[in-house]
Image (cartoon, rainbow, N blue to C red):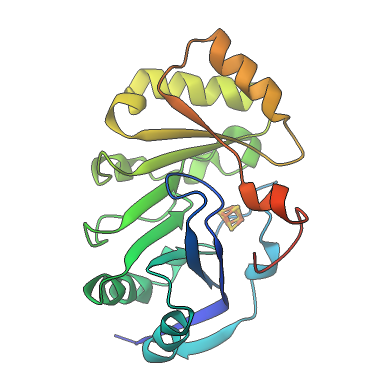
Length: 216
Ligand code: SF4
C-alpha cells in the first residue's frame, strides 16, 4: 500500500467545534471529496494539493508540537491510506480526531480515534450518500453532526434522532449551515421540541476569523 497522501493544507489553530472545541489542534486537510454539499465551505480542497509521504506529514505535525491532530477535508477517508496514517499517529501518542462526511465506512479506524461523523440532511443535496451502516461502528464517545440549513433539515434530523435514539447512543450535535440558518432559530426549535440530549454546535472559527478565512 502507498504511504503517501494528497494534502491540501496542514496548519495549527484551535479546534472550532465539537467536543474538543477551543483546544489547540493541528489540522491536516486532505484533498478531494466525492460529495458536493450545497453549502460546502471547503470547495478549495476538492482539487490540487501536494502528494506527501507519511514521514513528511508527520514532520510538519511534530514541528507544531500540539498533541491533538484533526484529519479533515474534503473527505479524509476517500484516500484509503489515511486509515493507516491515522493509526501511526495514534501509535506515536497523538490524540487523533477525524471529521468525516459519513459517506465512507469508518469500520477500519483504530478504536482510539475520535470520530465526528456527519449525517447529511436533505438540504445538503447529499442525503442519499449517508452510509448508515456506520452507526454500528461508532463508539458511544463519538459524535454525530447534523448541519441544518432550514426547518425541513431540522425536522429530518430531529425525527432521525428520535427514531434511532441516536442521542442515547452517541453525542449528537446540531449545527447551523453558516449563513443559511440563524443559531437563535435552531435553539428555539431544540427547546420547543425538548431535545434535551442534543448539543448546539457553532463553528467558533467562523466567529473568531472571517467566515471565509482559510487555514484557521
Ligand atoms: S462532505 Fe464536506 S468537504 Fe465534501 S462537499 Fe460536503 S461539506 Fe464539502
